[in-house]
Length: 289
Ligand code: MF3
Ligand code: CO
Image (cartoon, rainbow, N blue to C red; front, side, top):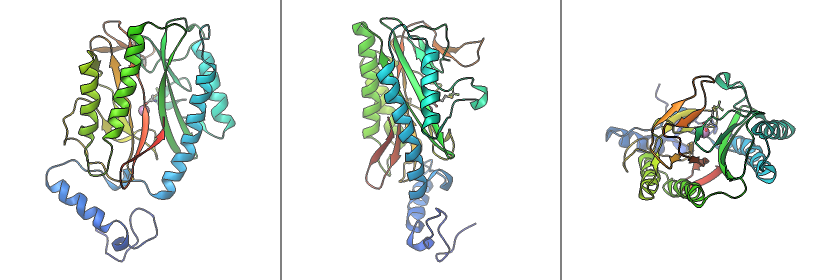
């Protein structure tokens, strides 16, 4: 139903539509008519929602910092799971992965050729030379945050170190493309290009996602994209950039036994960093990293 100019705005600000998002909606509609994909209202967050999502992210970041301080060779990945669970609960949050679509643990720990969704286990012991992605997601009062970092365990080979470093650069280059009235395809293309220029590949099947009022929302954020394509970015959108960069081929498979863990098909290492970002009036703000 179309709002009248004097109705309360759909965003929940309490302001009249004409004083709030009317012009904004007209601008989006004009871009939609040029055959672009545009965001729906339900993924555009207001000030209050953004504050609550930041409260969630405060926990998420602190949990990752805590993992960073304690992770080391000889530790079982299940110990990381315990750290994440205890710290999150102590700070008033709930680990978002726990029981999400049947996921059994509080965090994803993906080592070496594990691409993502590695399930913490008492049998998986970190050893010298491993690289590991720890992917932390938090629900606080129904508001969601999500980011992941790579950790180097002990003495890591130069080639693995470079993979981790280039993947981080991919995410940070992608972040620079986040601005209102740009397109998600701008983000994906710089991520993809930087990985390829370094001789790597980017996983095609798994991408970033909108997040905030739910763990996973529209849009899907892929990296096989051209500038000026995919969804329009507007202020109030929050999504993740989380490319999985492979040292070898892009192909992957899913562990048949647990139904979750993704591996590289060629057994070569994979790295991933994940950043959660807000589109602001004049650029971007990092929510969780
Ligand atoms: N944290 C992952 C992401 O970035 C979500 C994993 S779903 C889980 O989207 F159940 F495995 F946690
Ligand atoms: Co994510």
